[in-house]
Image (cartoon, rainbow, N blue to C red):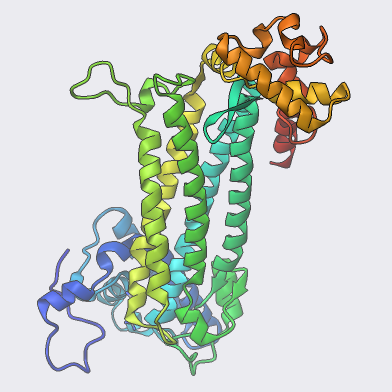
Length: 460
Ligand code: ARG
């Protein structure tokens, strides 16, 4: 990065910018990643200007050829970025002028960096929503596959992290899946508001040139056009909305991670995350640490931080553009990068997970997971639920005292607590009986899990 070039925007100023101020106010270090969008926006702008006769066709063609060459230079890492040119927009414009001369100076007619940068950020985010969607969909697919494979696998379901009732692992995976369906919907919804074009707002009030914003919007593939020039250059709520989608999604990934971390501990030992997704310890030879889920749980805080960053950035800004807005990029880019990386690694990791069905089953057998089933059984035999609840409470206390699960108590032992208990009780006291009995929409029965998977696949 050099600092040598002559500035494009400083004729009014008599003193040169303080060197440190120049560096301090520059954004090219981080906004250069929008070079493709900046060039695409400029090509559309020049094409529109020629269409409304502000540029000749020849001028337009020279500008477009110059911009295309610059894009190549940047792609090939031959472009010399300059701090003195402040940002991606001025760097490209300065290079255009040095490449094609006088005609290059006409590109910025009827435009300002204010509507240019707002357009670039929207284009960039729009371009990134696609790969994010793709990674999200890969993760959903991975979850469906695990759910399908483990539709019959029984684990203890928890409330308060205490054994509650048996559930199927497939059902648990489909709970995660449901959260991601809502995340995908939120992303789709946010994408609509990202897809609105600020270009044409110029600095803040519009321009005196006879621009045609419909033409530019069409060239750039924008669904909508920002309807008010002041709002167009200063609105960043599309970025905040994206970050709130991202925060909720990361919150979900963080919850999943918390479960994976617990499940892969020696105490639970429900899953194996695969060596490729874990690391060892530099001192303790026995360790296999769940680094990936831990790191995702940690990275969730970055995305929340970015959310707060953007909200706070906007809360005191009067209309229209303020230089504060330059600070929107780093949090937004960081959220995009974090999300893309987290989703990608999660999809890969869930594709490689192995489930330790025996351990889950053993755990479900401890902790009286079928106690509610016994209560429901008694209700079906005519006992009011509150009474049934008490009978089962006493049975569990007896079981704990004699170190036996409910299913291990004899009929005689159970009958001490209720005369309504008969031989058929053992069907409901098994784990399989318990999960299979919850056979309705949204229930944990393997049958319902398979239906849910099928429904999910047809809706995809
Ligand atoms: N680098 C600036 C930003 O990111 C571009 C817009 C600057 N406009 C201005 N009037 N100083 O916001």
